[in-house]
Image (tube, rainbow, N blue to C red):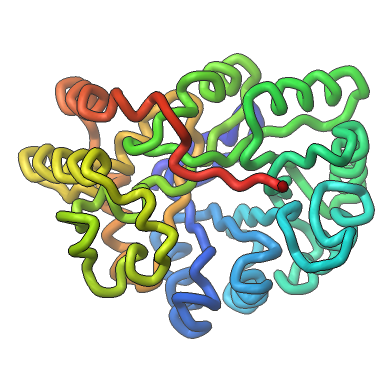
Length: 324
């Protein structure tokens, strides 16, 4: 496994990380625990979850799986998206974050989180309040590093300025949708992260399976695919994205690897990217994704991938999650 520093911090994370959104939803407890143990055995040390994944089940299952192995893991969770119906069941206020951190620690069966991330920008809470709360969490020892998710570049810049002015700890990372099918972060977010030493953690690195080449048409989605299990996903399936997936598959065949491995390898090679989180519902799926770590892109293939995906640097992001 290859390890990369998380942004400008001294923390080293595996180039491929494990996303756990499916645990407790599309993967049952026994399967989820097997996937986590397989990931650890193969050198993955970064595990990402959130307080709302599968209605908190993801965190609980991770807590069970890491019993006796907690110190081998860089454990990341999040809070900030809608948790419940009450007025304080969302956002990044001190009230909400402190309660959610304590609940996450209990479910994760640990007394600290390595990376605590704000799941999305909160327009209703002063950034000073959020950052002071996170600084206090680090001082308390319950959090080691802090990160953001679904922040625009200007929001991250504002947060960095406040942290520097007030002497608070800084965000060391940010999560964003980023892939060959969504290169919009390269417009503003990537330059910001390179300048400010913030590591990018891409999610949807395979664009929900589009970059695996599994889709030949919007109507002919394979059984069990995201397009079948999540009808909302069909809005991403169009001639343009499907053609990209097919073109990546052709290149991968010429290069002697799978299209998924090629897409992940391209993303790992991008400036500012620290770790790429991939989900799995079977250990076999994780093993397939792990092949990407062994793919070494030469300049010619990298350039071809850049060319066929160039138009995806513009337009709307593949996905983003915001508070209304």
